Structure formats: structure tokens, C-alpha cells
Image 1 (cartoon, rainbow, N blue to C red):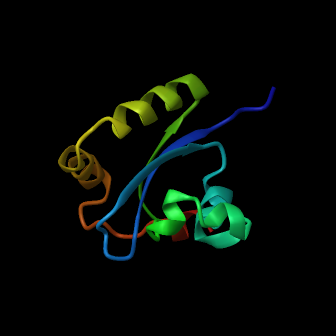
Image 2 (cartoon, rainbow, N blue to C red):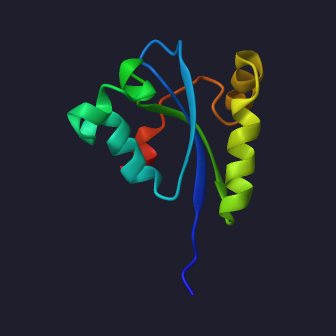
Length: 102
């Protein structure tokens, strides 16, 4: 039986002014997609592309997809300040964490 890991993650733009929350089962590939490997027609419509959100600043891991989906929905419902407080728990300097998944 294959073990899956699901990630709930938060991306930001270079100025750290926009936050995007997502879910994936392969954070390495997903970060590459956010960085620009989507098709041009899809990229122009994507929130992350429009706002330059490609910098990972927070992530959590889950064993079960239902748990990850519930957590993503929970975080998406929060105001910005609460999200920033969450990010600060593991990344107090809001450093870009992409290199952890290269």
C-alpha cells in the first residue's frame, strides 16, 4: 500500500502582500507549476499568476486527503491577520521556503 502525503500550503508574492492557500499531494511539482509551467492560457486566468504568488511561506502535512481539504477550507476562511499569525508559528521571518522542495 502506498502512503500519501497531502500538503496545505500558503504562497505569497515577492512583496509578501498577497496570500494564497492551496492543497496538493506533491508540493515540489505544484510549486513548479505556480512558478510558470502551466499553459499560457491557463496561467493568465490563475490567481497565483495574476498576483505573482509563487513563493512558499507556510505548509502543513496530512496523511488523509479529507483532513487536508478541511484544513485548507478552514484557513481560506480566515482573515489575513490570522493567516499571518499561523505563518509566524513556523516561519517568523516570512522567508521563502521553496528551496526545501527543489
